[in-house]
Amino acid sequence: MSRNSHLFVVLGATGDLFSRKLLPAIFSLVVDHQAEITVLGAATSDLDEATFQAASRSDLAAAGKSGADSEKWCDHFLHYEKIPTDGDYSNLAQRIQQLEQQHDLAGNRIFYLALPPRVFPVAIQRLGQAGLTRSPGWTRLVIEKPFGRDLQSARRLNSIVHRNFDESQVYRIDHYLGKETVQNLLVFRFSNPIFEASWNRDRIDRVEITVAESLGVGERGGYYDRAGALRDMIQNHLTQILTLVAMETPVVFEADAIRDEKVKVLRSIREINPDHVVLGQYTAGRVDDEPMPAYVDAPDVAGDSQTPTFAAIRLELDSWRWQGVPFYLRTGKAMKERTTQIAVTFRRPPVCIFHGRADSCIDQSDVLFLTLQPDEGFSLEIEVKEPGESGRLRTIPLRFSYSEAFGDIPEAYETLLADVMEGDQTLFVRSDEVEEAWRLYTPLVDTPGEPHPYPAGSWGPEAALDLLGPDVTNWATELL
Ligand code: BG6
Image (cartoon, helix red, strand yellow):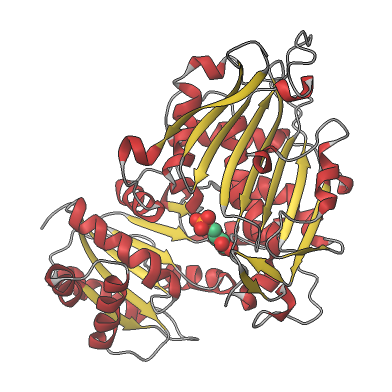
């Protein structure tokens, strides 16, 4: 028996998340990291094991992981158990014991809730009732986002989790935290004093975090129409990025030290002024030269839906470091381009001595672009004198590209699942963190207001520009 063997129990294993993300990531861990993983897929569908294995073989092939190794692994290490819609999980508990004997496993179990969020509470309770929250080895619970729909439901869900599991067993996933470029924010800030020394209100004018997606809502209208941009992206992915950009230096590089600092950032954010929020919804347009129908014409979306597919918010942090520096969060579907980027605009020189040589003194702000995807890397835009008589100033980027330096980078889910197996909670969201984020956005999701229309393929509603104030002509990300 190997003490490093694991049983991954995926609840909701017939869904898209398992086939597209989890299965390929688990298989990569088996192949690239020699992880000893047995998978028990569980769902309410009446499937036999051979059918589940065959479907998984084609899912792996679709993810570019075909071949004899993957087929052999699916046939030996993938299992399936039907779970009842209404009954308890006693059959699941028995099957787990039987598989642990069959594969000579050490009793280390990961329960992954790849389920629709409305069934999280009941699934957690049933795991508890079936005695599955403890095991001969360790037991860990992985919960997908969204964790709750607002502060009240997140608190309720946390209390169900804590009645059954200890917080040290719980891994709330935000897959953005698994992206290399997001993790690199901490390295960038805390091992390059050249930037950290300027990372404050004295040197920084404003920070923009943009997650623009060129895809529309696609086939996910049923989920998305109840979520919208605030619940789907702002409360989690963008806010997580914000905490990493704004946090203080943790005393050590350990999960709770880092998460303590992230929570402090969330607590420092002032109640959001409704005038600092612009919501939008895409109308028909063209993206990448292809026509895209309006959001309200997407499958499973109500014809009179007011769900926002775009949100831009100005946040203010009451902290020593960030007082007076606006942080803008902006995200949208069906936008002009797919880009996730942090733009840090530094203060311009206190006195402009290059009149007539720069287009305007406002343009003399240096901007640091941290591009999280695609074209991962960063660029620092600085002013340079053009050679020759004119003596004009030009903005030139100093660039770093991940792919040029390192080639391919691992998938977020691979990193996160490896961390769950290691028991490292650094990249997972703690209960107080998720509640603080909901405290901030609950008033907005309760009364979101009417969204501004914007054509698919644009950068969102024009009204969002007004958030930037009179001195700023455009979002830094669009000026690239
Ligand atoms: C998911 C959202 O969490 O993140 C989706 O539910 C969104 O709506 C996706 O498209 C974006 O993730 P990524 O990794 O493609 O930027």
